Length: 242
Image (tube, rainbow, N blue to C red):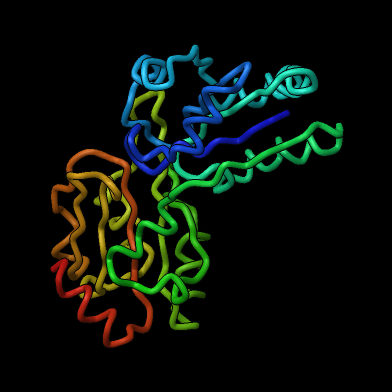
């Protein structure tokens, strides 16, 4: 059996009891370490679960997928994934391969940025297509074009910012807003910068782009939201973050 286990949004204690219990029962347990920033060390996770953890980076998951599926034919193989397990399409691709090989699969769902951002006060129903801003974005137009499409429909846009945890590289909110500004976003546009959503020291700041551009948000992970048409309840909520 192949089990994708959501590790939760931020800290070890965010992991659900169900996720923890299933992880402990796995014969082999991997930790996927590249699609999100982990706020705990593998050693801390091993102590938390009292279980040996095998680290998977991006190349590891791609090159070892056949090995993982082979193991899952006779053993219970778990892959712990920060946030919610199926947010990244890479993970469902592995589930799809398992199903084709008639390997039993199980998903343990968890919290993710897609639900946590509602703490800001914007309705989840009013978000349009989510897009990402990568490190190398100088000549890239697609993230801004996604934003423009959402704006035409009056929808909010969530920008996920690129990250490379293995090399301690994270696209900053300042860099993301600079990208949006360079592509045509006006300085007086209302934006929201978010850091470490779901943690005890999260930082959320709403304001005009020119005022948020150089604000110090502290440590990652980060995301940026540009609202679309606001309901009056959403407007009232955003005033709390200014």
